Amino acid sequence: MAIDLCIMLDGTVPQRNENDDGVDLTLIRWMLSLTPAERVEHIESIARSLQEIKELNRDR
Amino acid sequence: MTGSLLTLLRELSRRNVEYIVVGGMAGVLHGAPVVTADLDIVHRRTQENVAKLLELLNELQAIFRGDDRRLKPNESHLLGRGHVLLTTTLGQLDVLCEVSEQAYEDLEPFADSMSLGDQLEVKVVGLEKLIELKAAAGRPKDQIALPVLRATLEETKRRR
Image (tube, rainbow over all chains, first blue to last red; front, side):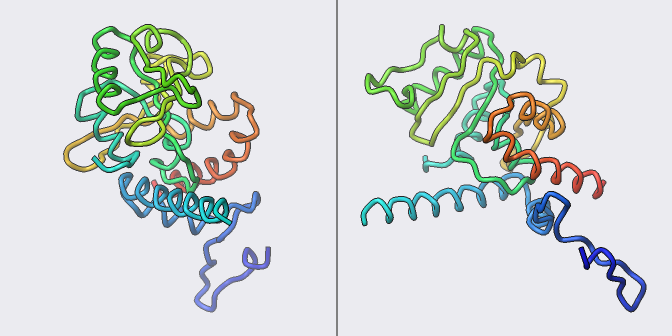
């Protein structure tokens, strides 16, 4: 990936945002910045949204 | 009580039920960005612990999921070796007597203690062990989660 070869003007190498499996590392870093309880709350809000979308599609 | 798996975790811990979180929720607690719709736990199969767990399940009106007879779990279900898949007023709860033939006592040495606030601690199977269990299970849904879990483990180690 191009970003792996990129070196900033100050000599630092930027963090990779994706690993070889295509996993978004920025999401993992963000999740790790939360407390365990916040992580569960976040995932539950996504699950609720997915359920709402599913119900909207069912009503169509 | 609000319908929330987080509340369910807190209720289990508040009542001193001995259990270890496994499955997708264990990955979430470790920081993996995976979506899960249920809570999987492996409980200690002693009569005292099963009694505490059953008392909570009764309060949460737990019944077997996908069974029109609305069967309630009982002591023999929770003292057995199978998977007890339940619907409760706080969400979907899978009470696993064993996972990949490993019981509470087998998993406990590989469990991490995590704070849920309010001085409540929850035991969560370690990320390396979770990856091992998912890889051993070999089901497509477990295989899909593995790259994210492995990347989370690498990132966690990098931060130490």
